[in-house]
Image (cartoon, rainbow, N blue to C red; front, side, top):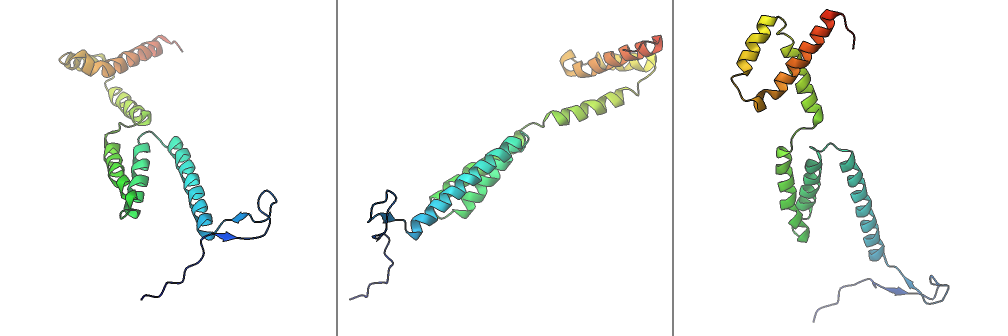
Amino acid sequence: MWLRPHRRTLVVWSSSAGPAGRPGGLRLTRSRRVRRWIRTGALLAVLGLTRLAAAARPRWRPLLAGGVLTAAGVMLRSGSGGVVLLPGLLLLASALFVPGGPGTARTRHGELERELAAYSTPAQRRDLEATLDQYPDDDTRELRDILARQAMTGHADRAGWRG
């Protein structure tokens, strides 16, 4: 015959006033209070992560979500929470395929404009345009637009226009 382990009572009935002012109300126990604090903390963490994700750049959003899901999956690996590990890893991998934001394209476009500005004489421009003619227009459209814009501003500066 085994001895019963000593347990605390999970529900405590008291004769103190309950929420409606009636005696004999049910008082929350410690385990329920802890669960409520855990749920509240999880809700606040989700709200905080939602705000962080809204402020993050589009490239970093799947990385942030993948990091959170992977960390939760590793911590809860033995229970049913380990189910989120695989989606977290997939989001981390998919972050590699998200294209860069407009800031990256803008800096690349500025560098391209500076490099094309080195072709300043008409002979150099003709040589460059002859080289570009060998490729499809879809591939060289950005270069042609930059060259046309530079030619227009160069013509305006030579003519004394400001605009």
